[in-house]
Length: 301
Length: 301
Image 1 (tube, chains in turn blue, green):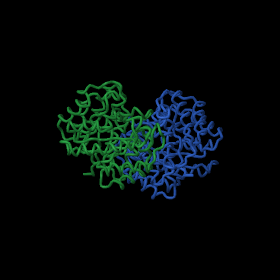
Image 2 (cartoon, rainbow over the protein chains, first blue to last red):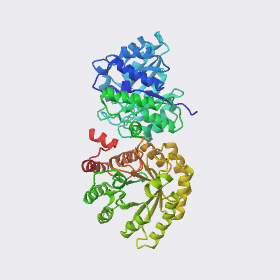
Image 3 (cartoon, rainbow over the protein chains, first blue to last red):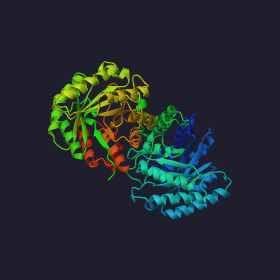
Image 4 (cartoon, rainbow over the protein chains, first blue to last red):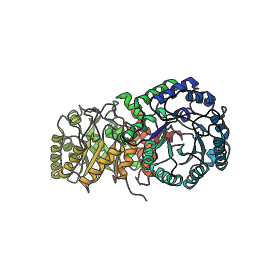
């Protein structure tokens, strides 16, 4: 058996935030169930953002509760952009919370209307909330969006990204997520940034989150895994985008990532046919065209 | 200035062989001219196969002559599947001939109706033809198709692929091309096969040819380049396919490869906007949807 890489489904969060068609909570849970059945070990089931910012997540509580009730051997996680969101997630007893701020000041301002430093400070509040809550065992990830560049600001300082990662680790993160929100990263940049962050936050696990805007998604996953990253975000079919990253394409597709990792000799516990079923479900429910190459290739074969 | 990687345009050959709409010779030459203007150093302008096998290449002589007449600082190359094709190409004085056989016996039989060993022997004839022809300075590449697997035969022996490469080198190839005709390769396989071939045929240059069927095209290019490969095939917009490789997707897109190589610090001499213009031309002339992510991203930006 090969070494394990944890592929996390973010389609229900990242994949849905740009989709205009509202997917009812029970449909979201059906998608979630199909991912669980396919063997996905962690699923970001929703986002605790204000409903007026992303109406698609107005049902965050209902979806999170439903996901917790699903059973199955998986971790239900949710994204939160601030301590308000964390409170909501903690109140439900979610076992994992992914807090995300942007390394790009301008993206952070557009996204959550405060500076990156203010968002870093808020992470300390969230750690305190977690520590004092009944859900004291909830794992807290500290995520860094626009870590490889920003559609608004352009270049993002690599030094700053590494500093933020170290700071989040210091404040009590159980995991660091490094996200190429807009899909600008190329493999050399991945090597530089992940090497520095892995060193800065060791022994914390570091997760990689890539978008495929310029086609470099899988090359970047490959590079991250080569450096020792063992947690990779992906979305069913290659859905995804960011309201404040115009032009960004979807996340790397779950089936493409899984296909490559299996080819590289890693074990994921994920069944490719199960993911393809989830992609067909999304295609039919959301009316979107999956960008996954594996999905297209296997449909033709 | 970074180290140079030679990106070769194969869209006019690989990209066209599955396209049903006949592109008139003058349109092919316009495409060729736009690639030359974009700075592409080598272009596979046509294929000297029997017109009844691939009607799209019935105009091979006309296109090759036209390409030679274009001027501009590029190498006009053509694919040939046998010594008959090589005679036609040599008669025109083409500076580069890419001879291709299949490592998969079954693919070779389907493609050229003879065994791989018969095709290897024919390469010796082609070397002799070249040596005795007026075009004695024509460079001869020995290409190995289905080097990473075959839609008909399935698995292809890696040992056999390396042996064929060594044999082609021994017989007088000036370059070895290793092709993932159907897009099955993953980065570990690329590492194993290219490492072994680079060692077996040194100091001959080795070129990499990938299709993006399972989305691994750029990750594979990245891996090949990391090993020292400095010649990479690509097609405008990501066109391509093989009549005997059902389900195979197009070549890696020229713009995606160039974008990544520039990001990695390599120099290609190729202007991205020029390639995008060529892709728009192909889209409009051929009625195909480009699969290049860079093309899509830059169109949105």
